[in-house]
Image 1 (cartoon, one colour):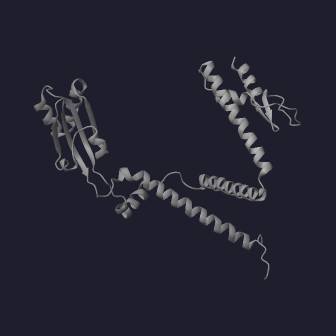
Image 2 (cartoon, helix red, strand yellow):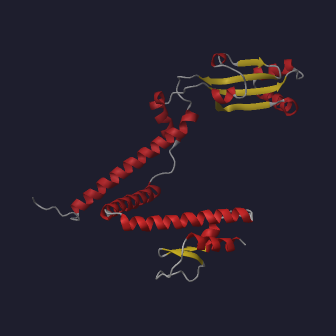
Image 3 (cartoon, helix red, strand yellow):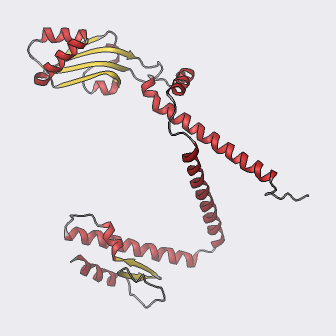
Length: 278
């Protein structure tokens, strides 16, 4: 049982003296130092399930040593730091900032919408699309990768070039037995960097609507339904999450600013603030 070893470790780490600190009666204490108690359930909580006894001992020992060291460092520092008032001021500022932040977040959750309408997203995109410029091409299309020497390549080539509903159905059936990779992305944009991981193409190759390349082991066929080139506005579908975040952050900022103004003006009007004449 690793707790026997823990008890031995605790004894070796420090000499436990009698203390006036009060131990929680419903918890089993493993050690006490500088009036602080370490309880068995705290150690239990850091030990993952299904670990070996040796690992449990190591984890428990490391945690106990770190816990004791932190207590000793903190208590020693408290006795030796001179400018305690400065620390208290910092703590007060931090406590105030965290309290205000928590209250603001609560107000935001209660009073602001969680989502932005599609119309508002579209308006923002149309107005500021020049600020969402892509640095690499994006493609919508269909990619089929088959082993070199695969059967019926003439027919398959025709399906991929066509890309219509019936052709796609034939490609999907063919890909079950023959494809090394099949990607249908007519409904989403694929970046050039993602595409290049699947087919050996260069940006200059993305000029037509159909690409066919081969190497010693594979044959690649790419049908491009749409292409957005580098330097052009980012497709709306890709820019959408960023636009949503921008709009929501602006709403939050405006709400907090307005709430602060309202709070101040109400305090002036109802006499909460007392102004003293100079």
